[in-house]
Length: 264
Image (tube, rainbow, N blue to C red):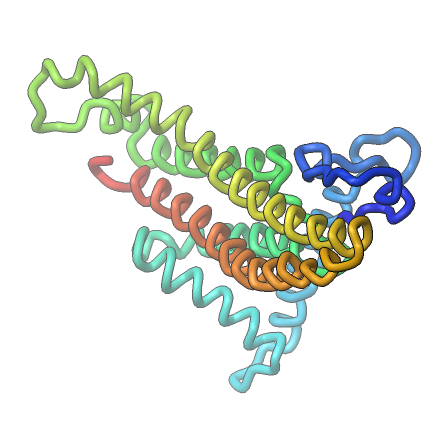
């Protein structure tokens, strides 16, 4: 994972902590900013998800094979655990989108601990921002379609049963929260969790390598501590990566449910 070049490490004795610069990658070909490692991970992740569901659906039967079982398990998890508990029966139309969203985020998150790839593409803010905007468009669209343009914003900003004076403060807050804050919080929650988790792993691994390669001697034996800690953190990070995919999809489902509700 971004291992320090031995020749460079031999030039000094100070440990250079990883930072935002370790999340920047040079293009593979030419000067195109799009042909980078994060882009490759996104493409590979998309292909992996497409292949998974193709294998799951190509020979569907009452007795599923491994591919069908995995595909149906993921689909059923999103349908029953997320959509069923938040949107209800009306949510069936959104299950394909939310299942795809869950798989896509989970795969891009888990790429941070997959050998060779070893970088979570969702730590690049543009990826979560795009996904958040897609969910933002969907829940606002279904809300406007259900209640009408004016009805949607009226129900959002002026919930019935409150003193009129409260609306002076509540109306702009509800509008700001729903229209502006939601995509921002969706974006930052996912981005910062993946950024921070990957950065901590880098500190442990590069710190262990620094002790082993640069310091040597007695300190080299101590490298087992950060290396061992990085192994523990890898398993913890895998849990967080899947959890963050779940949270992102759950919040998207809750926003859709709120937009469909008679009073939201």
